Length: 312
Image (cartoon, rainbow, N blue to C red):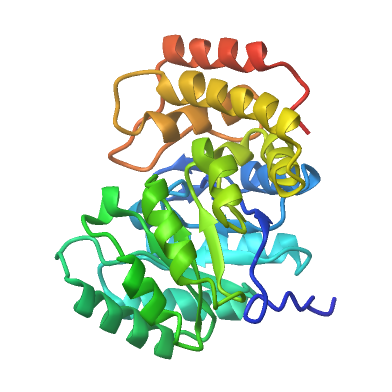
């Protein structure tokens, strides 16, 4: 099949692009059947693209073997019917470039990189790093602002500076800082082709109203219809529908993401929910661990309380 041209370089990528979880059977073994079911489930829910090997995909925790395998499998399954973004975040510049090359050969549309997360860098160093990475990448690059994990914020002015690079085409912001995001939107007013995406789904509605082009929302692994409908309602400014959907999104956040005392309860919750729903395994990469049987029961109750309307 001939590859569809999405023009993500010249036009912003819009819609709901779920950060796909990585279903595992063991630490270095992909749940291949579960991954296939999950991709089919989300695409049937109307999502506008897929982002693999991000934070929700546990990308930095996975072996390169697994990162290469999931890239090949997802790109092969999607078969150019939706844009696929591949996370290449790593502490090693060379390995990031290799991941970008693998994404390109597999048929992905773009790559996504957060700042290297061991040594802390200033804004000048970050700008230089991303510029060189974009020079080396065979695919267009999205910046990934994830300060809670990388210890550094990609400043709004740095985003503006990097947008001058012809191979840097967008920003995924997971800072949960709406003031920061609005500063970026204001600075990027003249760069209408530059994609602005947000991670935290609790702020999806507010971010789109502020100028975001879409969301990279983990909940869309479980309930793709819910986040697609929120995107559509906000784009059309259907405020009654937006208010209704926001309450449901917050219910997901306050129940499924809040079980247990682990700092990774969000990811545990998503994986437990998908396991309860019969889609894929809830195995997590080390040092993460899945919910206990008791905690998974709480997840099941939370899913039942949401009803079947949002499942595909």
